[in-house]
Image (cartoon, rainbow, N blue to C red; front, side):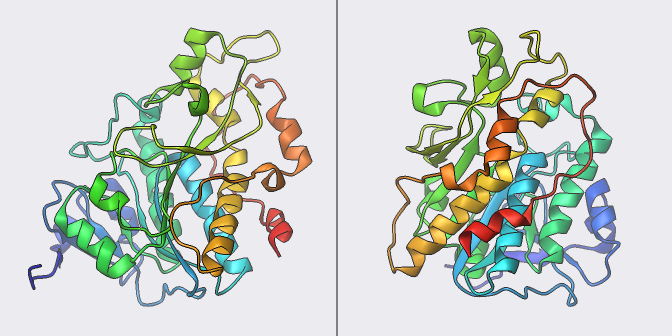
Length: 323
């Protein structure tokens, strides 16, 4: 291992050279660092007044973006606040979907349906949510020795939760967290449906009326790791049996369960970690994670209307079942 640091301060003009960074730099005291080997993106450190107040326990890192990732992050933050000492949010790796240099599958994934302004707003909010909780945010290339050193030496994850993340996670990172890496994917992977960046196209091709959220262990091949949990069904068609033409309306329908599922996964991982067990979680019973009224809404037809651009919020009342 080299003694040189894996990152260095960026000049102010470069740090604020992209729309997301320009907004994030408005909070004085944040540092923007280049990371060794990364072809795009930065490591952003919280300002001195942005401190973690819930340190201890299981160290959780998120690889996440878009509204799904934001809601998963909100659930993890809420869990840490409700149960101090159980978990620490150690860091966030996210997509900078407005960065033309980023290799995150913009033309293949959900981002292809989202205009630039919403991309900037969504990913700025994502990074802000981590920074305000005292956790660093990384917007760049993860398959570099510089980021792997940060992950290994600074963030030190016991577990990584991935939700709508635009980079393939390689074996060197998969091997790091002792409790495993878990990805959220909105299709029935257990039965071989919808793997890859466009699960909506699979629904259309099969004429499916419902889908599910799969939570699976991460492997080097996309969406192929062992499935840990499958959600109850979610209706994806309207009352006339049609998939919404606006795919973002469909994705809005899939959004609500994510926070409850992320909270349930976090609690199960903490409880297992508290017993001294190590290694990945093989099975998660998610029925207790979903309140009956939420499960009922999942079965309702998709409602016609415009895509909701407002930020989702996790219902912290769900956490009382884990007290």
